[in-house]
Length: 505
Ligand SMILES: Cc1cc2nc3c(=O)[nH]c(=O)nc-3n(C[C@H](O)[C@H](O)[C@H](O)COP(=O)(O)OP(=O)(O)OC[C@H]3O[C@@H](n4cnc5c(N)ncnc54)[C@H](O)[C@@H]3O)c2cc1C
Image 1: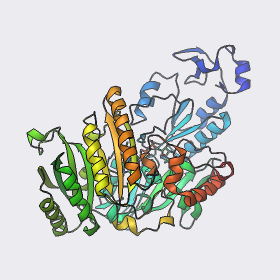
Image 2 (image 1 turned 120 degrees about the horizontal axis):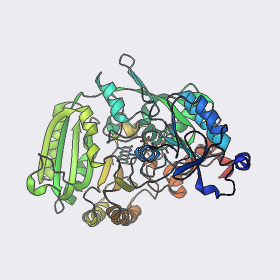
Image 3 (image 1 turned 45 degrees about the vertical axis):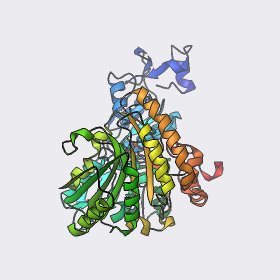
Image 4 (image 1 turned 90 degrees about the vertical axis):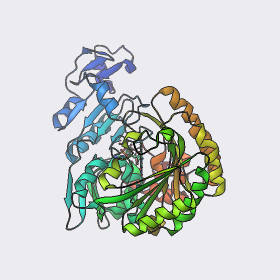
């Protein structure tokens, strides 16, 4: 239905009606929002349906609202794409990019739908949902895995762990490999094996012009540099090839928890220990509420406090020494130790950020967790309203720090030691609003102690251009802008942490 084209409007029997009230039906005809009123055969959408292998969902479909809600993790996002194109192949992605070009609509790309900003979904856009591109092939001998552009980490982890192998991923298994990897990718394996994007071997990309190109160290190396940190700016990645590392299948998990009074001293102790930890002891700090889990003593269930998690990925004695040293320096309120499968570690926090919950976040990079930073944390942590809101802090160093800053487009310095995230996670709109204010106040007080306003581009619920530029730094941003001008001069892929093409900067 050519709602957008003059031709269609002339043919439309309802052309005197305001444009904003016209949406497309499933069968390419016209409809009022809420009900079909007329059918107009032919046009771009019907021809698209003919060449698209997957399902095409529009406002005329009975399950349109259910489909668009299920696409996005953040329940605070409520947007109405013109078309949700559920791709099943690279050819489908080419067709969907072509449709958007033909009708002049925005393109939104959905990998796993997990970005706080909801950038995968947009009003009136052609939304390309890659969820159907999730095949994973593992070659255990070559230690390589290839997965589709819409694969989730749970799917990739399950396939690689069958061989005792893994790609560094994130902390929540229902996050998409796509967005997480293209923006960087920090998680349990960052200190052992670097970022997710550091482990890319090649990608297949559908460009703004609809060309299918491969990028690797040998093929289109400029593009390969850009997709490793530059986000979804250069095209739709339909497949990722990763190198794999030996991990698990069992790992050693140790959680130590301190109440609000003792937490700051614990953070100081953990901070002092971090530079001495071996790469295969992963470490993660959080300000959070203790879960209602069996291992939490009853009186502390739901209590706000601090946790330090140490995960042994290598020799057991190195892990045991790290745990003992931390607990000696700062005796915890309670602790919990267990061996567990790596795939379970990867799912451990899934329920703390369930699908459809409301979320908002801001983050900072910190070179050091100074006493001044710990004082800011101690002042703000108790003020959160939602029990689910938390302060996950990713500890870097190790292999992450051994990659050169310019080796990839990743938006951050390799000498940065912490990514401190302040996340509002709330079951109701009221609690979210309260904690949105909490996030902003907390973040403003941290910025003077941080490496500026730039931070990890995957942790931006509000995507401000100034912060995107600050995250990459002016030199890297300029190089990215030049690359953008080469691969996407019209800024077709702009619903993201956007890099503006050089000519328009
Ligand atoms: C609860 C929660 C926990 C998180 N934990 C971590 C963590 O531990 N570590 C970490 O590094 N990050 C983490 N993140 C951030 C996460 O990396 C980003 O939100 C990322 O964008 C999610 O990717 P996605 O594909 O699921 O998201 P989507 O919303 O689908 O995609 C986000 C953007 O990425 C681009 N994109 C996605 N896939 C493709 C593709 N195949 N081709 C081209 N462009 C694509 C698009 O521009 C899209 O707008 C977390 C986020 C949440 C909400």
